Image 1 (tube, helix red, strand yellow):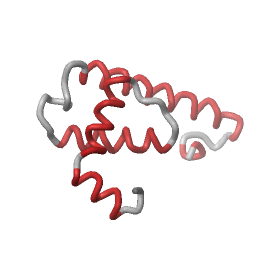
Image 2 (cartoon, rainbow, N blue to C red; image 1 turned 90 degrees about the vertical axis):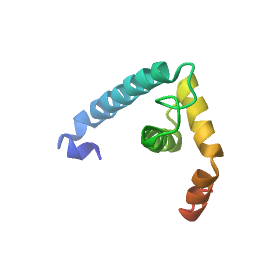
Image 3 (cartoon, rainbow, N blue to C red; image 1 turned 30 degrees about the vertical axis):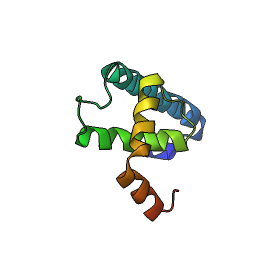
Image 4 (cartoon, rainbow, N blue to C red; image 1 turned 45 degrees about the vertical axis):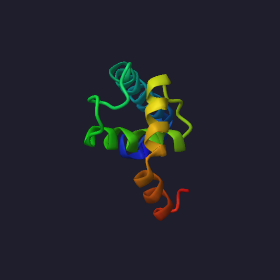
Length: 92
């Protein structure tokens, strides 16, 4: 995917590093927002589904989730509807 951002193959590693930096900064913000809460806005909302999507792919790409994001991800994975959808999609 790095060729989407630069045609120069020599720049691909820098693009990947910058992307990881942006993702890690985003997770740090969400980690702070989740401190002391089970869900993004206190009770389950669409924001949690959106965050789960990003957490799911971060997990698949071996990107470490900070403490509160990891706990949120585990809570989401424990939801029966999430388990069902992941099974239907072939992930579990």
